[in-house]
Image 1: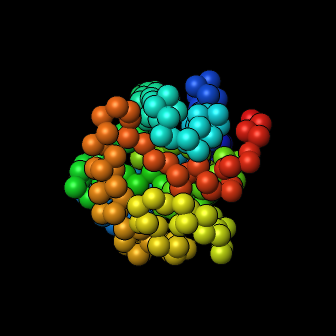
Image 2: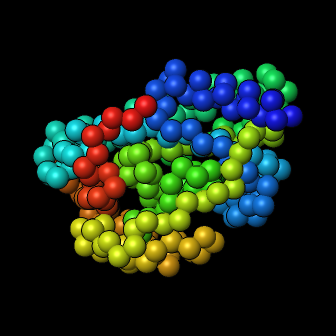
Length: 246
């Protein structure tokens, strides 16, 4: 079994490298079924393993958020960070899931960005949770996954599967400590500055309504794309990276 686990992991990692996936992690979800079901309900039950993948955002495009009122900067960020990257992630999880299914395993690819509860911005699967359990990073005060390699400048997707992967149940401890950069820059004042604790409600750390209302105000200006990303842009774990990672 150990050899099969290593082989499956290696194949998935190679598939990721061929598609320029920046990070791949494997999560042991056997003790998190109820936590997953709190997001997606019964459809996400019965999968003991998860695959987390992430694509790093363009450093130059994210750095352009320092002048996000510039229509060119806003358009580039919206197009690249959402439309293009999400499509690439969805294609990758689809291909990986097809491979696992062909091998006889159950596999559930989940959308990179689609929300099943639009009012409360709740997805089918918390990609941050799967990535966190897989050891790819920690969930910061900004409610984003923060990786050692790219900070929060990364977008994620997940596959739930029955494939016997060599998987971790090793959540990374938070490293935000006393940093308040994201709290101070948030134009919606929605980030409360509280370090993440597993299982706590999002509202303990983040006022989603303030963020949502802020975006509704931005949308009134139809001359440019409505983007923010300030908490992602300012995070010191991503802001000064040279992005020279394998």
